[in-house]
Image (cartoon, rainbow, N blue to C red):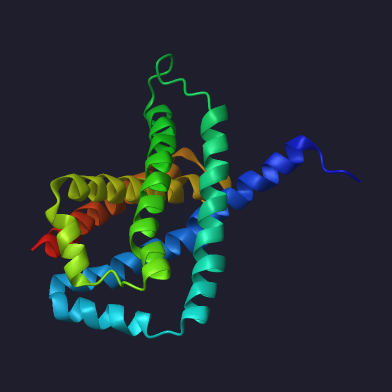
Length: 209
């Protein structure tokens, strides 16, 4: 029996929602943990980066492709389709969640573009030239005011998309049922957004030196 268009879209939306939490959201948290070591000093961060770089390339590349790149491409490209078909109505109905509906889609586009830039300037650079994104490279990158601004905007957009997406996931999947539970979770997610944004900016400034 052929799958109807509505059923297909429903399943893709669920898969899109799930992929934003795992593996993409999980990796975002790990990436913060990994790069947060720069706050302990360049040597600590370098030691952690070298440990990951020591993983055999075929294994590392396989993990990156199947755990990161494919899910990110699916989530990002299907997200662009959602943005194209979205119908924001905050001008007619200026309620908080209507604004967050639009911000979620805007932040998703910004995060997708930023991730593409970040992967291209670090991982793809390594694949094609063999040059690691070491501390000196990151320091030079953050010393450029334009690139620092791009990274700050990209990090904040990515964190907002993740934090607000956790709330959306919980509503979509029936984890939070009822207005009060949804309000409490949304407040908690916004607190996570604020805390991670502050941490992310401090990490970038630590690379800048």
